[in-house]
Amino acid sequence: MHNPRHFLQFKDFTRAEFEYLFERTRIIKQRFKSYQKYWPLEDRTLVMIFEKASTRTRLSFEAGMQQLGGTAIYLNTRDSQLGRGEPVEDAAEVISRMSDVVMIRTFEQEIIERFARHSRVPVINGLTNEYHPCQILADIFTFIEHRGCIQGKTVAWIGDSNNMCNTWLQAAEVLDFNVHVSTPPGYEVEPERAGLYGTDHFEQFADPMDAARGADLVTTDVWTSMGFEAENEKRMKAFKDWQVDGEMMRVAKPDALFMHCLPAHRGEEVAAEVIDGSQSVVWDEAENRLHAQKALLEFLVLGKVKE
Image (tube, rainbow, N blue to C red; front, side):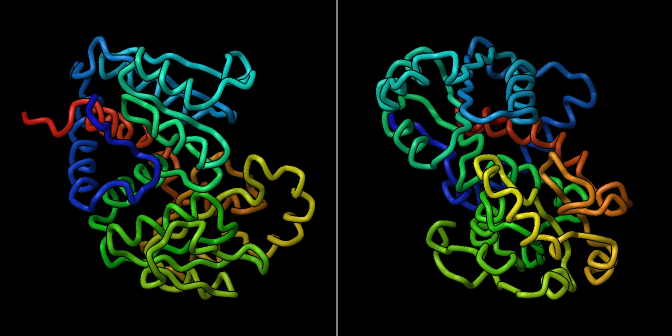
């Protein structure tokens, strides 16, 4: 049995590998838009394991695998032995003997790391409490589509230092750009939890306006992520001054983009005038999950392809 490649954190891939993936994403998206049949994963099977609710992750992986000619199987831990105490290691041994690639959306990162150690096939992180690498893969491709190379650019992260923020910070180290982070007191970045090598690519700001000033991209996420619902009332008060609104976008660069991984709460973390405004690329960002993940599936199952 060979050692499969996994995509569990953004830093699992090199800069050169991401450049390859972004180019494959562009090609695969172009084929999709021109209705060209492309089935490199015919007769291959993706197993999708969900412990957390999902709309975009399930749809983009399931549709993407079918568009590549393969089959996607949905497993929810509530309806399988995984939810009845079967060891993660045993599940990995069995599931990976019946499939070609596995995607998991779960809680602690430690769960997916244990699964991957016992898997015979590639494992993809579809979201954990700590990281969301597939979303950032799509986000950076979206930035490249609209503004070109992200190297040397500045991304402003406004709000909770959650799995999205952690993954932006990892991406900045791999692809050499900067992240300005502003969070309410008590919700600051934890470099060790974010899995960072150092602090050369990010700076923390007490005032979110200072974080957004001069940024090429302003991005945020909900104030209360899945798994933290019990803190919702407390978070509503703590984050009320961390809304991305028109005033904040005006201190960023004039051509700055706005992104949000969705679902969004207008009037909370983002004003309607921003997410529905001309600088917002959230619908491109959502669609690009489909194309970026197809490039990722192709790479993990087949390696680099030559055409």
